[in-house]
Structure formats: structure tokens, C-alpha cells
Amino acid sequence: MDFELTVEQQRRYDETLSAVREQLGEESLGTGRFFTRQQWKTAASLGLTGLCLPPSQGGGGLGALDTALSLEAFGRGCRDTGLVFAVCAHLLACAVPIRDFASDELRERMATGLTSGDVIAANAMTEDDAGSDVGRLAVTARRGEDGAYVLDGEKSFASNAPAADVIVTYALSDPAAGFFGVSGFAVPRDLPGVVVGEPMEKMGLSSCPAARVSFENCRVPEAYRLGAEGQGGAIFQHSMTWERACLLAAYLGVMEHQLERCVAHARERKQFGRRIGEFQAISHRIAVMKQRLEGSRLLLYRGCWLLDNDRAHVGAIALAKLAVSEAAVANSLDAVQIFGGAGYLSAAGVEQMLRDSIPTTIFSGTSEVQREIVAREAGL
Image 1: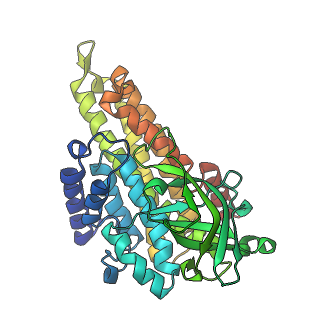
Image 2 (image 1 turned 60 degrees about the vertical axis):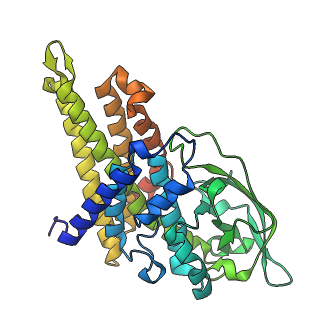
């Protein structure tokens, strides 16, 4: 059992971290409300929008573990976690199902743009009555006389939608077939009948715009369907496997940076004539933060390794997603406490990490859903 990264993995991690710090560090992000196309193109130039896409389309051709390591470096070096999340959603929830389930023609048409950053993708699955219960989709896809699908209905929350060029979505094509009645589509934003709402106000990940997406008698040619008709449920589960395994790696990077800041603050800040790091109340809090980080990192790396090696991975990835997300929230609360009043102020950026961490227990399947998966895998 070898816990060391290979020379190539360490080199890629170090180079990605250095490049992200230089080109997407705090001073280069600007003050806009949402990420800009230039920031997106910068991330793309570093290979981050195509890490696990085929080299033939300009991608990195990486497996889950190597993708996770690069996203961890991205999260550690970039101070705009909203941008990091947006890239991850584009890559894992959208580009991966296009990579694995689009027709050769559609994949050839879209993959290069997805990798280069010329095309931004949004995932639209969630509905008002279909959050964790994705089997209750109300958006429908019926066949028209010309063989195209006619999509009708509304998705309630789609990250990247206001900026997207293509929307990966799922609709009920056979209401009587249950799980096997859902079909997936990669819908160009400019098709008639695609209506993207105004960006939502959110608690965190603010620079990643999210909006409702409506399909109003939207005719989608069969060529834009992903996989076979009725395969959408399995396609979505496949994309969520990659998202749970790799997106959360970005939060390992965020927690690494957060811990570095807490240690530096505890060394410098003095109260009662002593550095606060000398007080057990602070030093032990930091020790627990380190424990959560390293424990969740090992679980995530293991889940990615199992996925790469085609081993049983569903329970392991659910356990990793649960561990990282819960650690991200707990460590962020501890960071605010360590910084005290300064941590509560926006200027320090500490409270921002807390707000950005809260969604981790909701997206890609809530913590409650992950616990159900783990319990089921345990034999209950």
C-alpha cells in the first residue's frame, strides 16, 4: 500500500498550483459579480476545463484521481471558490456525460469547445419537486413528427446557466417507465424555446451564476440526445459519481489554504501577552482541523482510485463526499472562531470560506443521501 504521489502527479500538482496562484490569484480576480469570460479562458488555458477529456479533443486524458489532484491544486490556489465550482460543474456534470454518452458526431462537435473554454456548460437537473428525489422529474420530452424531441417544463437551479452555451439536462421521455423513462440531452443555449432566468442571489459561491431554465415547446434534434432513450437516469448517476469523487477535491485545496491561514494567524496574533497558538483552546482546534482534512483526503483519494480501477466504488465515493463536505463546514466554522471578530468581517475572507462551504452538504447529493448510500452499501 503506497500513499505517495508519483513524481508525475506531484509535478502536475505543483505546476497547477503555481500557475493558478499566478494567474487566478486574489489580485487577478477583479471585483465583478460573476466570473468573466477572460477568467474562464484563463482557467481553460491551464487545462482545468478539460482535465479528464480526451487528448484528441485537447483534453488532459486524466483519470479520476489525477483529475482530483489538479482540482485540489485549483481550489488551494484560487481565492474565488465560485469560479472553481463553476469549472468543476462544467467539467464533471456536463463534459463527462458528453464524453461518455454523446454520439461520435456530437462529441466531436462539442468536446473541443468544452476543453478550450470557448463553450461553457451548465447542468440542469434539479426541479422544484425533484431535488434529492430525482425520480420525480416534471420536465417532459415527447417525440415530434420529425423525430425531434419537444421539451417542456422548468428546471429550478442550474449552475452556470446565465453564462452557458450548452445545457445538459434530463427529461421524462416515458412516464410509465420510471427510472428507465428519463433521457439526457445536451441542449444548445440558442435553440428556440430555451429560456434562462435571471441569476439567483445565493449565500455563497457567488461568482458562479445560477438560474432557473425553462423549456417552452423546445425542439431538440435527436442528435443532441445523450446515450439511448431512457438511459438518462444512469447517465446522471454516472456524472454524479465523477462529481462527488472529483469536485470535492477542490475543497481539500480550500481547506489546505484555510489551515495555512489559521496557523499563520495563531502564530502572529497575541492576547494576554502570548501568541494565541500557545493556548490549548486554539492549538487543539487547529489539530482537529488538520485531522478532518487529512482523513477526508484519504477517503477521497481512495474513492477516486477505486473508480479508476473499475472496483466497487459507489459506497466509498459517498463516504468521501460526506467526509469532505462535513469537514469543509466544520473547519470553516473553526476558522471563523480562530480569527474572532476579524473572521466575521468580509475583508478577511474567512467568512467567505464558510459561506462557500455550506453548499457542499447539499449539491451532488445531500449529506443525508450520502448516508443512505453508505448504509445501503453496508447491507441495510
